[in-house]
Length: 303
Ligand code: SAM
Image: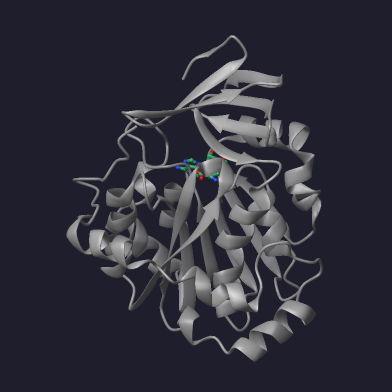
């Protein structure tokens, strides 16, 4: 990424880049783990980590609602929730909207980044870090689940940076890692991960799907169009018991109306089912590419 002449060039693949015009710079610097740019673009406040868009003020609600609510509403009683990553605090915000949640633990590797988000991205976290049900832990997410007691959580949400070669997250996309997540989930537990672009990174998206399928009896891929991510964005659910496609639509509508403390802007009981409608061409590609990612041979994103 280059940041000069008031623009940031974000490489999407080794051959495609997006040039972002910078209206204003809010913060630029390096933490121990990653480069952080918080700027203003036409999407409002906009956070980049290691040169990659993480979320923007005008469409973060789409990403965070799409990540959180399909799993939360697929589980009948999501009381204990673990979030790994999610530095901006918006995943925590969406989880805490659920009245049934008793405890939400968020584990992020980067304390300096979370401090910056608390300071500069108030529109994202909206005070969620101060909720008495929230607990914040700063350590590597893999390290945390390795030491965690078995069968602790109803829901695990992985809101991590992409699996880049140099980044801190690639070990949290492997079969061995998903086995650890399986172990910390209760017998009817369910997990979700962000799974990169279904267009620009189809091999990585398919690999995440195939890797989770090798561990969980129920695996579902879905997608949501996030304007600032420039394509449909993939998500993958792994579940020990509940199938998100077997949720009762009337019951879901009732729960959305009654079990939330604050309204949603994107997700509703009709959208729930259409999120899982992967187009024929993408399914065809998924059947051809995407090997299982392992600790010995992890799958990395191209850039
Ligand atoms: N929306 C994003 C995307 O599309 O890539 C993910 C957003 S969130 C900012 C990513 C978070 O993952 C960051 O806060 C980062 O510090 C955290 N993270 C990366 N590697 C991690 C690890 N090994 N353990 C815990 N957190 C990690």
